[in-house]
Every structure is written in C-alpha cells, then in structure tokens.
Length: 398
Image (cartoon, rainbow, N blue to C red; front, side, top):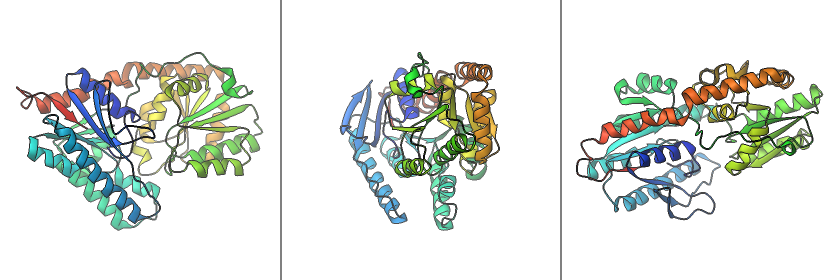
C-alpha cells in the first residue's frame, strides 16, 4: 500500500492479524511513518518500509511520487519474496497503482492477486479537483479498470463499491466480496470520562480522522463559528483529532474565525488519548460533504464514534446512513447552518444522546465490528489458495 503506514492503517492491520490467526505468514510493504525502521516484525507480521516521497504541489509531482512509490514497493516486494513464495498478493488503494506487481508475482510464483478496494480513485480526484482535467479522470478510470481486470478477487468496503465495480468495470459478481471496515472492539472500549478534556465547559464535541480537502474539517470550523458566534453558545468545546494535507490551513482558519479558545487540534495521537477523548465526548462529527466519493463511501470515523457509544451528527449521505442508522442525526448535505442546529439540539437533549449512543454501540457489537468482517476476509484467501497451499507454506504479501 502507498497512502498510509502499517499498523497506522487500522483496516490493513486487522486484515494482517486475521490472516496470521488463520495460519498464514504475512509480509507488508508500505511507506514509513516518522521514526519507523526499514524492517520490523510486529505481532508476527513482517513490515518492509520505504522512506516516503511526497513533494506535492503539481500534477507532475504526483506522477513522480507515484513512480517512486511503485519502484520502492517493487524492490521491497522482491526482497520479501526471498523468504518464501507468495501464494497471494494483495494491493490496496489509493492509488490504483500496483496491479503490475500482482501480475509479476502471478508469473513468478503463480500467486493469486487480491485487490482491496479502499477508495474510488476517479471520484476521489473529482472530489478534490472539481474543475480538474478530464484526461486525468480518464487515466484514473483506466488504472481502475486495469486493476480490476488483473485481480482474481476484489474486496469491496461496502455494497455501493461492489455495485460500481460490477457495473462499470465488468467484474464478475462472484469475484467480489464485501468486507466492511469494522471497528476493533478489543481496541475501542469506552473508559471513564475525563472532565478536564472538556476544558472547563459542560460539553465536548469530537472529530476523528484525516484532514484532507474532501474530509470536511473546514465545515466543522464553519459550524463551530455558527454555534459560538451566531447561536451564542459558549458551553461547548471542540477537539479535532488527526492530521492531513490541510492541517496547517485548518489551524489558520480556526484562528481567523476567532475560535482558538473553543477548538483544539491534537494532531495524530496515541490510541489511549483517542479513547479518553471519545469516552468524554457528547457528540461525534462526521462532516464529510456530499460529493461523488463521500456519498458512496463508508466513513471509519462514524463507526468509531458508535463503538464508543457517541451519537453522531452528519450530512445525509447514502453510506453514512447505512452505517449509522438511528445512531446519527442527518443534516441536508452541505448545509452548515442546519448541521450546527442539529448539533446544538442534540447537545441539549441528554436522554436522546444516551439512547442514540446505546443504539450505535449495539449495532457495532452485533453487525459492524471487525469480528463479524474477518471471516469473510479470510475466506477469500482460503478459497484462492487451497490448491497452492498443498505442501507449500502459505505467505500472503500485502
């Protein structure tokens, strides 16, 4: 994978641990996070990591970044293969870049190629660059098609993605399995609330997630501006956890809106601190605006709020409603004023908050948690590798 490090990417890490539990050996190639070594073994998973290169700023720089990442991934994949034959190779997106490596190992090792479809890259481009060049969009569509055609099996994160790849990419429905990004209930457990995290106010609102152009964190700040300066509410603190391409711009926006006393940015923080904040929060915000990507994407933050029994305020997006159901209240897409009003109404209705939180936690425990998703994921590998595993140590390369 290219866009995140492991085990920071929780979905991929849970996939790795599930394969380990099923008796596979697993090697991962990914970029380094700050301070990471080039090689490590963690919980039985071999991690091969390269120094990331992300100059940003222009279309040419993105091409260079992806070319560098592809070559680094190829080299480390070949290095990992020296320890044994891969019976399966999995690539994760974005970007839809690594299908040639899957084909290479199909030739070298007769490996099955599995594609774990995290994002719709063409729609991601449309969402980040609404006036972007069509030639780039067409190139991304072509890369998606090449990936789908190369894959022996596609793992989709929800039914919307499954329908898209079957409809527009012509993938055989029998070769697509839905594995949702379910919360890990062993990690996400509510603890005692810490009143100090509310920063001397009665209520705390939390955001957890990536801070990129399509994630709507700027909307959180605009909403806080309405709550504080238009609705006159000085009883709510906001804590925004995470980082991303827009982090510095968002801090500047907060200061420009005179919200520094109300809004705190934590950056990326350890799981223990995340758990403390979400155990204290009254409401979780899923501010993803409606666009071609977000409407059909499952938002991890929404399910993590639910795992902590935190009610959710969100825009009315198709997959957000499927995930959260009655655990969320829904504003008209992209209407900041309505989002702020729903937030304040929920803050003022403690019994409703408590009921919604219980509903969300129950839904996670009974349907959405990774424990319910892992068997579907492992079954894909067991079906693809049954023949190859006869007499051969099973190794899955991700």
